[in-house]
Length: 350
Image (cartoon, rainbow, N blue to C red; front, side, top):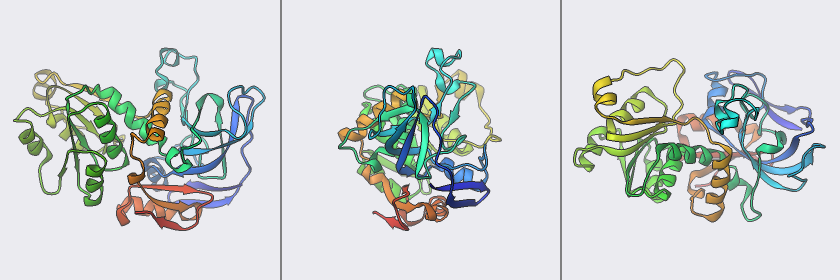
């Protein structure tokens, strides 16, 4: 099969490799579409490369073509997406419905071969069927939406909350939509890319704050009569934006962080002002879970979540290095790039 295999920093080669061999409890899936994630960019640049060589890609949709002898709930021809987080199912955390804490956790496309290929394999328990009317391209957005949904869950938004989302990338724009669907009375997106901020307004944000022109902290306090936001969701992963989130949230408010920081990053906390006296609640969310995958499929297939404005480009496997460069430079008004073994070149959709 054809696959894009990452050997080292900036060394991504499309080559012919063996089709994955499935075990008794696994299924083989023909890749239809796979989204390119910021994690893939980090792996390509060597900022995060846990295994090499590896076939990246973890935002996938496809068709089941083969099943293991013990598989009972999947069959060839099923249209599916896949929760890439594979846990042991029997440890302390798994038994308490905290699979992301599992010591044996691995992620398809990050720690094992993924979807930048004609085929990939997955455990039966991680496979989720998608409706016939849901396109493979839209279904490939399930993974980022599942992550966004869990972050909003962790933030415990209640109807009427004033919500600030820091970040105008695919995750930030997804979080903004889910926050609106969760009953937020006001959703404000802080960013610094004009095209993406215009998309934020298109998908339901009430207003945007351009951090190049205004200080987000001062702007939010002005909008809330000096209180700060009820809920802040951070979707960037920088020291500056983590710090902003802690400043923007009101006393007694809630912060959920899902932007991926460097392992070396740290921030200074004003323990009295920001923690003790403020009595704010801080949550973290680094991935989606099976239940948020199911809900994400429902949100996309029902049309409640607007996915089309976020998919801006298509790229063939051979064009992955160039596509990654577009994402890094935020060029050509890029938001989300979808790849497929069936695509050729790079196509700008909007």
